[in-house]
Image (tube, rainbow, N blue to C red; front, side, top):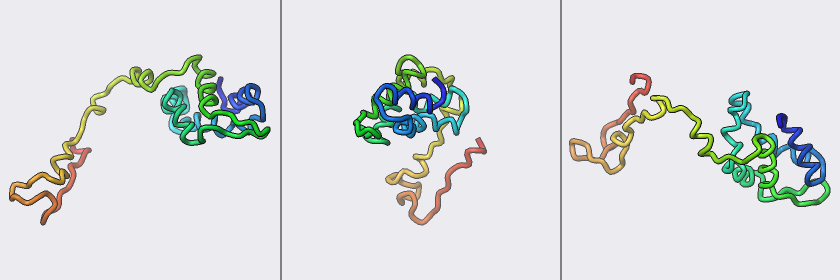
Length: 139
């Protein structure tokens, strides 16, 4: 579909009221364009979990200018359906991410901050000595 205003016009045609009644919800879906200004921004919210997040953010329903109560989830489903023709899961998006080596690297932070680990001197970590995390850029 494209612009969130056009999604809002479509919502008004479907459930009544004006585009302004729906615009904040459709803008919420497309806020991720701040991060990346192409179709990949949709990976953050344009999926089933994103629709439920919309509902948590705006409430289960909205009351439009005519007084009608419209379920937020239906508005979210409409937005995603208009963009894709179906509602993908987040897993559908993740399957398309090509793994890179840096994504699987993890620092062994547990050895530095484990609250019950005993130090070689027999004292729990953090007693009488400071611990610093490794510099990730040194790897």
